[in-house]
Image (cartoon, rainbow, N blue to C red; front, top):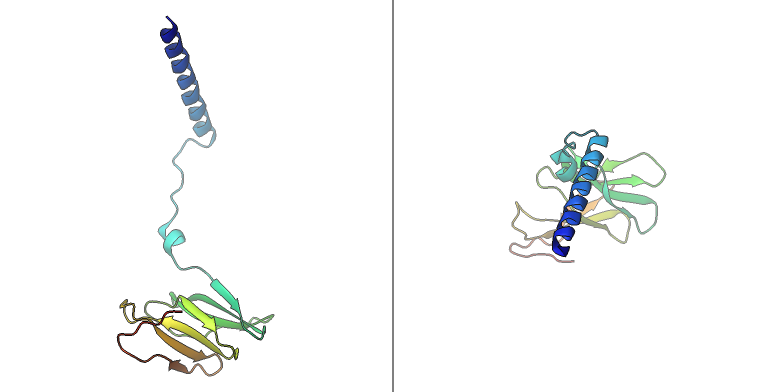
Length: 141
């Protein structure tokens, strides 16, 4: 008798929970939730990885340039943002300031081979120098 009573109580609680969930869904509009677009989850960010220069006068960050992630630099307090790298293929994800605050160093591989090379770009002239021009070598920082 006792186990039959507990089954009735358990069934009553389960029905009440389902009714509560149904009421909650109905109060939220009852329809399917909106699907988050793929580009929101997996697309390029507007800006990321902001870093202040060692002298504190400039800010670098990664942002898209023609839909490819590149390094941008701006003067702190000004609206003079400009891309200082010009990658048009895989994008740049790893960078940092040189101690002179006039160069940005970044890592890039060739077509996904994961042989990361280290590059330096002068933020005023745009001149790029390969600091590790060796084949089959992988830079790690």
